[in-house]
Length: 530
Image (cartoon, rainbow, N blue to C red; front, side):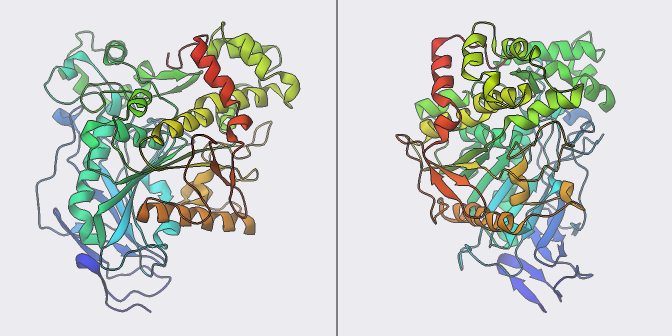
């Protein structure tokens, strides 16, 4: 029984009973008015809080606009619409442009890392989905919140709505192209101004994200406009685009997109009148291809992003905060399933060399095929999965760790539970093992996991370790425990294996990183961004 508990900095919970949501909600004070949330068994949730005006009509393809201060009570008891996207395994279809909302989850009876008197640490989560899919409401952070942090999950504009570059828009005199990143930074600004009203410390904010969310975190590390918005960063499988396309490249794609949606005059007025359905149907015109995986990446717009991550990390010209970054052992298996098994069948031995040449270039293909011969793998699928994961995510994470560690504290990891459940894709011809996305279920209660088999006892133990590491890092800038800081000389990473993580120096050899580094330096590889 929790009766009339007053949380710090103005948040009140009335008459909470363990295991029940309340008719009388929790209340937090924000600049837009008092927000009524709901008390759950292990956390308090404030859902669907607007952090910017709806980007509709004349505000489509404009930077997020602030909401005027208000005093009316806000109903924060249910999720708001999430951003427009087609249906996918990674997100629920939506036609809503009115989607700039976030959710705040606060502790009831915390344990662990909170600092008495200073307010809770804050962790702001950016979901993945290739900057095309995903929504904040899929991630319940109760495992983290119970350890004494406040977690904020954010919706942001996706696809063409979030990342269209076009001369007619770019000439309007505002920051342009990376609207989704601007949304995220607007959300961070809202958190800085308002999170004390939820009992948190606005000077102790950690941004974290997975896949495209991790790529977003990487972008904020190098973004001049993100300076001072956060104090720590966690990148989960997000170092896949170290070199970003130029604005000229992105604008050329944008002009092709405009033609495809019927705007032959290439005008901003025409673009802002295109129906949502037509935008979603034609946004493939602005995709980027990384080794045959089609996604969206930010572009070098000159304001939000002035440098690619690789160049910024090498020079030290980035927002210098402690970083925790890593990848999953079998990253490439999810993408191989999407490229082949779920699109007509497994890759064949005859197709294997052809596809390697297509994805990496004819000049690089012989070296890659010699490094990853079919005789070393149970199937062509798994050979391609290994080289794709190594080149695009595992080694790029390691290379970023080496660069960053010259300037800031870095903690590298690899998630490696070979029996981790796959909640996003159906079974295919090979086991997924610790592939892309599988670490998420160890940090969050996922919507996709509802009604499916739960973790083993060993996996529960690993989940507790991971929640402890993530929240300790949010508190202090170090995961503490048995996790040493990254040392570029030995390239040590924390191996997140059940039931208890351990430290390894074998990551680089396991993923052929010396080979990929030498191949890149030789100039033989096809451009990673096409």
